[in-house]
Length: 513
Image (cartoon, rainbow, N blue to C red; front, side, top):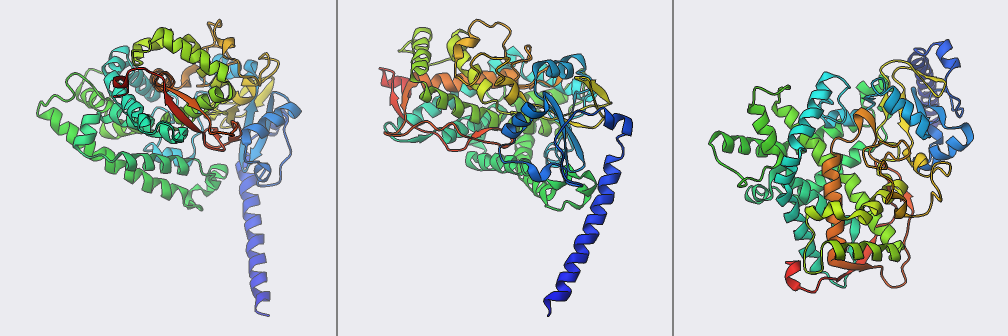
C-alpha cells in the first residue's frame, strides 16, 4: 500500500513537469511569427515539447542525409525549443557562406563550448564582429604566417621523427593507428605551443596532457538538455557545465605555470629556442607590443592556446586513421603513394616539409579521404543574426543552421561514382582546395568562418602521413578485412580502431634514428 502515495506523488510531479515544459516550450517558440512559420522549410513532425529529439539515431549524419532524400535539400526540425535547419546542396551552401555570409557568420556554440573557451572569447566561438576579426587576423597573420610556420618547423619535425623511431621498435607487431596518430599529434601540439625543450625541462606530462584533451572532447560532445532548452541552462540539470569548468581548471593548471615561467624568462631577456619560436612566445611578445590592432591579455592567450590544443586535435587524428584505412583497403593506391614518395623524397632521405608541395598524389588521397569522411560532417552550426531567405524559405534569426557536407560530398548529382575512393578526381581540379572555394567540397567549411588553423593542419597532416608511408610498408593482420563503419560524434570516427603491422622500407638504418 505504501507504493500508492508514492505513485500519486510521481504522477503529480510528472504532470507539473509536463505543464511547466509546455508553457516553457510555448514561450520559447512563440518568438517566431505566424507569417515566418508559414514560410519555414518542410520537415518531419516531432512531438510536443521535445520535437524530433526522441527520434534521433546514433549516426546523425546518416539520418540527416536520409531526411534530405525525403524532404529535399533544405528542411527543418525542432530539437527541443531549438529550431534547426539542415542544408544539403552546394547551391544552398553558396547562399549561406557566400551570398549572405555576414548574416550567417555567427556560431551556435554549446554551453560546454562557451565554458571551455573562457566565455567564447576564442576564434572558434566568438561572435562575428570587430573582436572576432581582430583575433582571427592576429592568429592568421602573426602565428600562421609563412615566416612563423617555417620558424616552428623544427618543432614539428622533432616530434614526427620521434614517432618514426618509436614505430621502428615495434616492427612486425600490431600498432593501433589511432593511438599512434594521437601521441604524434599531441606531441606536435605541445611542442608547437611550448617547445619540446621547454616541455622536458619543466616536466609537462605528455600523457596527462593527452588525457586532459580526451576528457575535454568527451565533455564537449555530451548531449546537453540545456542546449535544447536554453531556459533550463541556469539549472545545469546534467552537470555538464560544472564538469567542463572542472576540466578547464585542469587546463589552467598546465597553461598558467607555463605562461608565468615564459613571462619570467622574457622579462629577464633570456632567449629560448635559439631562433625557434613556439606559439606561446609569439603571443607573449604580441602582448608586450602596443602598436597592434588588438590588445592581447593572458585570458585571450589561453583562449587561443585552447583553440590550438583542442581545435584540430580530434579532426587530425581521425583523418590520419581514415587515410590509412582507405589505403589499406586500396593497396594499388597505397603503391602509387609510395612510388611518388620514392620519386620526390628518395629512398635515402627522410621526408621534409619542403617535399610536401610536390606530393600531388598524396594530397589527392588526403582530399578524397576528407570527401568521403569529412571530420566534421555537419561542420560547426551557424546562427543567423537576422531573419534570412535561403532556397526560397525563411530562416528566422537565431536558428541553428547545419551545412550537411557529408550529404554534399556523397551526392550522385554532384560527384561521379560518389561512394568510390578515387583520388584521381582531385589531380586535375584546380579549384577543389581545402579553403572551400568550390561549394561541392567543404571539408573545412568556407567563407568568413573557414577553419582558421587550415595552413597548420595541412602541414601537420601531410608531414605525418608522408613520414609514416615513406618509412614503412603497412599491412593488415592475417585474415583481417578493412572495417569502414563509422561512429558519429564531434567528428566521424571509425567504429572499430585500425590495427596495422609496419615493415621498414628504407635501406639505411640511420634514417630511422
